Length: 245
Ligand code: NAP
Image 1: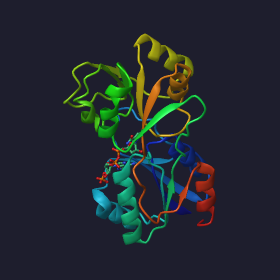
Image 2 (image 1 turned 90 degrees about the vertical axis):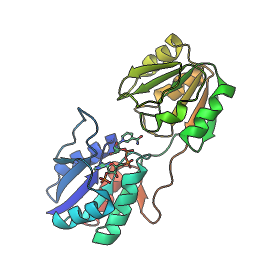
Image 3 (image 1 turned 45 degrees about the vertical axis):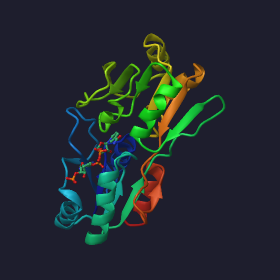
Image 4 (image 1 turned 60 degrees about the vertical axis):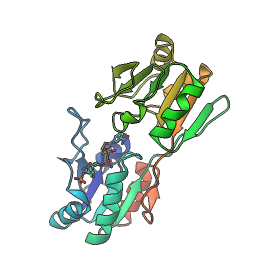
């Protein structure tokens, strides 16, 4: 039986862990950052909390005799992905990145690209009068100076500084198209800010924005670590692992 570490916190990581937990060729351990009070737990073994940087992760890989790592973390979780790449090299454990594809604009979409949250915040005044921000609590301080009213939807409350006209909606996806239409309408939203997370669970807001003719500011993904092979689906990750079983 071979040992695989799945760096998780995403739906794709849970799908992969479920398939591996049912496969007698693999012993799977999923790792979560441990920040969410009631996380959706993957099947198989689960560990929680940081490793203590790249060196801590490399030590863990050696101590646990891990044969392969799949980095299935969120595309914006750049720190842990960088550590995984470094630890893979130090500990000599092969690493695959599992990254869901980003979203692509279609007819009727009015998307504006931003490299950072700060750049996204700076675009808002020219695009609308009431913003829905769905980029999460991390880095939310980038919106502190925004003058227009901001409705922020996130899983956990952000730390100050907060924008002056700030309203918090605590919620966690998946979201429905009907719900997203109602959210935009009820809060009189006329501009949306989101990260390019990709995936179906949080995509209905983009459809609702398109239907309503609203501009969307899409924050681009951070660059992934160089030299790490990458796939887009849990099925492809399973094929990569099968080559190592
Ligand atoms: P991050 O900035 O890349 O990571 C910060 C630190 O948190 C890492 O250096 C590591 O600590 C620890 N960490 C992160 N993910 C971990 C994991 N899966 N297992 C063990 N330790 C982990 O990450 P983040 O953006 O805060 O995201 C944290 C978690 O939430 C990730 O697992 C990610 O998949 C999930 N998530 C993130 C987003 C997002 O927008 N960023 C959205 C949805 C879900 P040490 O250095 O001590 O090892």
